[in-house]
Length: 416
Image 1 (cartoon, rainbow, N blue to C red):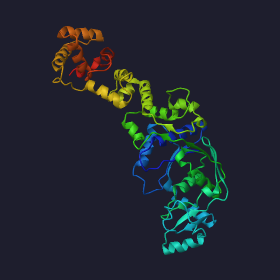
Image 2 (image 1 turned 120 degrees about the vertical axis):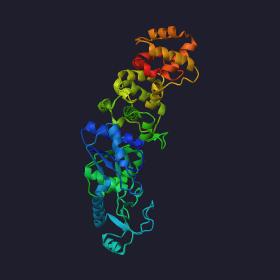
Image 3 (image 1 turned 90 degrees about the vertical axis):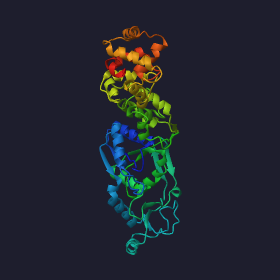
C-alpha cells in the first residue's frame, strides 16, 4: 500500500503534487491501494478548508484514492501506543522547560517512566513523552538515495507526544504507516531526516515489516507562488502539469504524454538523484501541446462555447500566439466583444460592418474579402487594418484567412 500524506497548512505546492502523482502511479503499477492521509495533528497550523481543497486537486488530476482519513482520527491510538512505550521503558516523561521547542534533549528526565505519569496528571504539571535514543544503527533503504545508515548518536530522544496530548508528526506518521501497512513511502527529500526517527519508532513498537523509501530530489527555482492553485490561475491544465512533473528529472520515452501512457513505462528508480529546476517556459510549451491535443468541442468549452469551430479557432492561436488558457482567452474574447468604432480606423470599420450586415453568407475568405472590398471601395491599409480590428479586436495575429472559416457563422456578432 502507498500513501499521500499532505498537511492542511497551506496551498498545495507543485512538489507535493509530484509526490501524489508518483504515489498514485506506483500504486497502480503494483496493483495495491493508494490512500490519502491528511496530516492534521499540528492543530495551530491547520487551515480550515485546506483538506477539502487537497481532495479537489487530486480529483482534477484524476488521482482516485481507495480511502481517505485524517490523522487526528487516530488520536486515541497514538496516545495508547505512546503510553505503551512508556510502560515498556522505551519512552519517558519529560517536564523540562520549553521541552517541545528544544532540538536536543539534555537527559535530565530520562529516568521518569509510567510511575510518575499519574502524579504529574494529578498535579497538572505540563509534560511531554520522549522516546529513548536508539542503541543500534538505523538502516534506511531508499530507491533513489540508496542505503543510508544513521548512527545512534545522530538520533535524539525526541518528543512523540506533546503536552496537549497530541502526537508529533514523526510519531503520528510512523504509527499511521504501521497501521496501514505502507510498504513504500514516496515523498520529498526534505523529509529524509525523519526516516530514521520513524524507523526507530516502528522498531520499538515491534513492527517487523520492511518499509522502503523514495525521497524525491528538490525542485529548485520555486517560491511560494508556485502552488497548484497559482498554476491553475495562470491557465495551465492538469494534463500538462502532470506531464511536466513526471518528466522532471526523468528520462521519458517521449516528450508529450498522458497519465495512462506514463503508467506503462514509469520507473521510480530511474529518477535523477540531483535537484531539478522548475522551468515555467518548458511547462508552457507542454501546456500548449496538450491544449492542441484536446478535443475541439471540449476546448471551446473553456471559453463558454460548445462548438468545434471555436476549438479549431483556438488551435490557430496555439500555433504561435498562445500557450495557456489565459493567453487563449486574451485572443478569443476580443473577437466576440463589441468593437470600438470611435478609435483609429473606426470610420472604415463602420463601413465594413454595414456591408457585412447586408451581405449573404460567404463560405471562403477570398470571396468574403473580395465582396467587402468591392462594396466599400476600400483598399490597401485602409481596408486590411480596419478589417482586422473588426474581425479580431486587435491589430495583429494570425492570417485572417486562417481565422475566417471558424468565425463565419458568428460574423454578425463579430462585426458589431
